[in-house]
Image 1 (cartoon, rainbow, N blue to C red):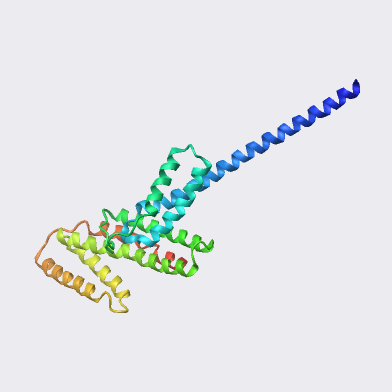
Image 2: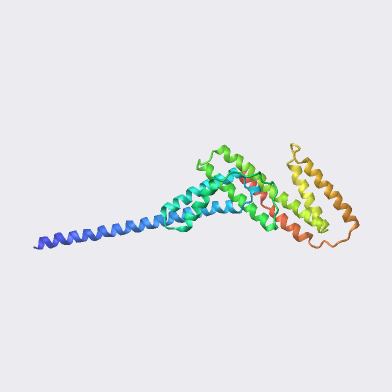
Length: 252
C-alpha cells in the first residue's frame, strides 16, 4: 500500500509539472503570436501610409504597386493569424482591389501644395519610402539595380518638392503683389532648374520663369505695395531644404 501511495505521488507530481509546461508553452505561443501580429500590423501601416498620403505626382504607379504588394502580403498573414478581425479583412480586400488597378493617364509632375507644411510632410514620406526600398533591396525582395533606379527617381522627386513649391509660392505672391517674396522664389527656382539643366531639358522652363521675373521687376518698379510677409513665408520654404544635402549623401 505505501508503495502505491509513492507511485501515485510521483505520478501526480509529474502530471503537475506536465501541466505547468503545457500552460507555459500555450502562453508563450500566445505571446509570440501577439508580437507577430503587432509587428506585421506596424509594417503594413507604414506601407499603407505611403500609399495613402503620397500624391500620384510623387509616387509613380510602378512603385506604388511594389508597396501595395508588400502591404497585401503582410495583411494576408494578419488575416490568417486573426481570422475574426474585421479591420484586417477590410484592409485585405482593399489591397486586393488595388493590386488589380491599372495605371490611368500619366500624372502631372507638378502638385498644388496647400501649405509649406504639406510640402515638408511629403519630403518626410519620400525619405521613408527610400528607407523601405533600401530594406526591400537588402532583403533581396527587389533587385538591387531596380532599387538603385527607384532611389535616383525618388531623389529627383524629393528635390522637385522644393522646386514646385518655390514656383507655386512665387506665382501666388506675384498675383498678390508681394513682389519681394515672388522675386526670392523665382530666383530660387531658376537656380534649382539651372543645376539640373545639363541636357538642356529645363531651358524652356528657365526662360519662362525669367520672363515672369522681368515682368515682376517692371511691376515692382511702378508699385509701392507693402510686402511685410516676405521674411516669414520665405523662411518657411527655406526650412524645407535644410536637411536635403544630408539626406542625399545617405542615399546617393
